[in-house]
Image 1 (cartoon, rainbow, N blue to C red):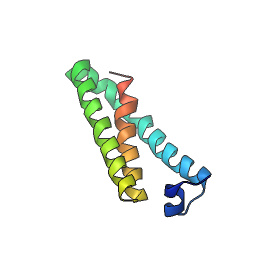
Image 2 (cartoon, helix red, strand yellow):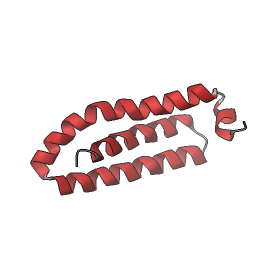
Image 3 (tube, helix red, strand yellow):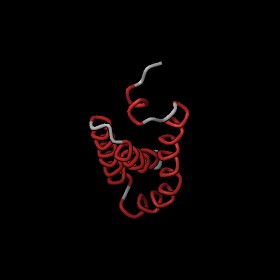
Length: 91
């Protein structure tokens, strides 16, 4: 199986999958606790809009990182994406 990202970042397929999945998961573990409080305070509509913007920013950061073949930027984008997407379940 040929994958330019794996070749560029010099990591195995398992490592590639686990690191980015863990970054997404860990960022989504703690943020929903605050998401419930924010939904009560500002309303679900505003929280939904905010989280949608955060997801879009995270995807943009990941896209930028993949385009420039920078694994740290992809990882940061994945963390931002996790913050927004896991909180969308609350709103």
